[in-house]
Length: 193
Image (cartoon, rainbow, N blue to C red; front, side, top):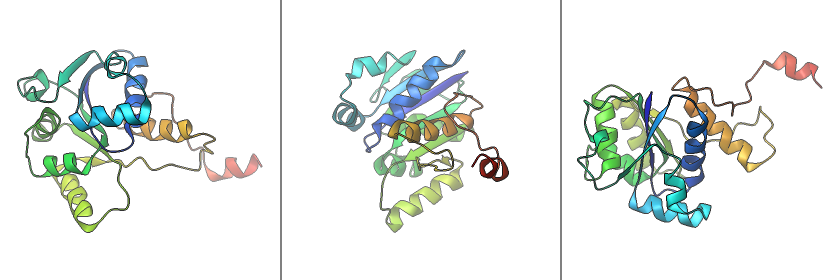
């Protein structure tokens, strides 16, 4: 299976990094990575990791301005794409098919080919324009998966919350990352007390 991962300039770069780490551990998944210009800045600011170390987690790395990359064509078969995190600028570009960079162009290709496009928007609070863009993206076929923490799984650390969101996104591609503590029902939870 081939998956495209894009990291854009919204806060929450750790979601993209953790996603790459989880995919690297998954067998038989070929990861194609593209990082936007502002995504590179956010990665450096928020994670303190070197970009080249992050890029090593992918099998193929594409430059955001390379509109002739393999992932820019529908004939290049993939299972889909995950944008983690997805900035509002990227969301707007996707909704308006304003494909002036590879992140948006690849997302546009994924949509036109009816493949899965999962967007992890990381912005708060949202104004009505953001909400309209999210609705339009969903109407176009994108899956909106904001990284919202779950509490039924009793997260103890920030890493637990990040892992849960990343694991749930990977569930959408039938990739069991082992990151999700599965809900077993309220009755079992109450009996454990």
